[in-house]
Image 1 (tube, helix red, strand yellow):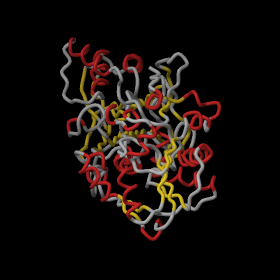
Image 2 (spheres, one colour; image 1 turned 30 degrees about the vertical axis):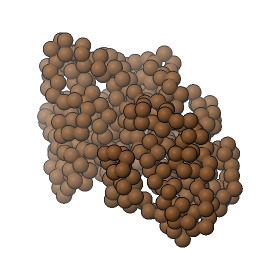
Image 3 (spheres, rainbow, N blue to C red; image 1 turned 180 degrees about the vertical axis):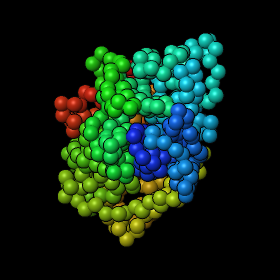
Image 4 (spheres, one colour; image 1 turned 90 degrees about the vertical axis):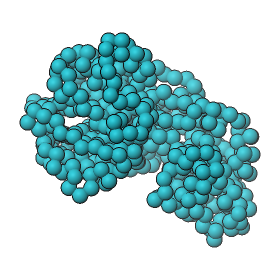
Length: 449
């Protein structure tokens, strides 16, 4: 697939000795959520200290760089650009100064009303230094002219969806999630201090203990008095957690929205096998994102899972390459067929999702060239037909394969002997009583906000 991109990973630490090097460890665990830039801001003796740059965490914080940032409070960020381009100016955390003092913000998500907010703030004289919607938080906070909890709560209530954000002041930290809960944010303990992150895998890396999710519409304040909670907004009973976190974005070993993505993906493969069974010789996952679903699919049908495709992890993602020919070449650089595994056999390819289809079409031809007698495709989510407004950077609607073509046409264009997508009912059924608490707009076109 041409990968959809998530809006980033955020991390916050309060009351943790050596907060900056510890934050670096946590950001390594969140690297899958953003690979364009990385940054850390710390608070110490009434001032903020910042280091950020373009590239991976290991490149930005090589050697002792970052370890020299003082303080026991830190906020960190890894970024993909969804609103705003890829540039150092847009790298986060963003740091600003206003009448209330200094503040840094790290944000995961996209503010759906960002354009309208920008216009309204510009009319009031706001001057923007970046092209990312995260800067809107700084301007909205400046309108409040204070750093009090009430000022932050008022600003968050005005921001709208979608965000999981961490604000760092020189003497305190505030973590918040929008009232609909689109993006994940979890709370934990690290020694005598506290940790906040997009996913629990960051806690595992740092040795923190997971306590709970930060609730939709909740802001958690960390200061000398400890940790306390405050509600800042109400969605009217509507919860819209991004289901793509379970299907694609989150690391399989994390706990996201109260469940483990590997288990959810494995179960999706089982349900998919029930909806689209077939006779075949082996199941091959499109690595790495399709592995868990492939295991469940194969288990349900009693088929072996084999490594028919090997992924080169040192090649950039195929969606970056301009034009279809360049993307096809990037796919061949990223995946290679194990000929002895697929030769003379009926192969079922399993992936988590299907966006442009560039990767899948190339792999189908490569498998047949390697001697596969049949190639079937099973996708562990419904057809993606609509763009996301809340922090997932899909291609344009016109580039979405399922928006342009019928399922039969997709099967033919991808050179597949058969094609099956997991139904929305099948996917939602995995979550039982919580099935209606997720956003499914990219499949249904029904936007919750």
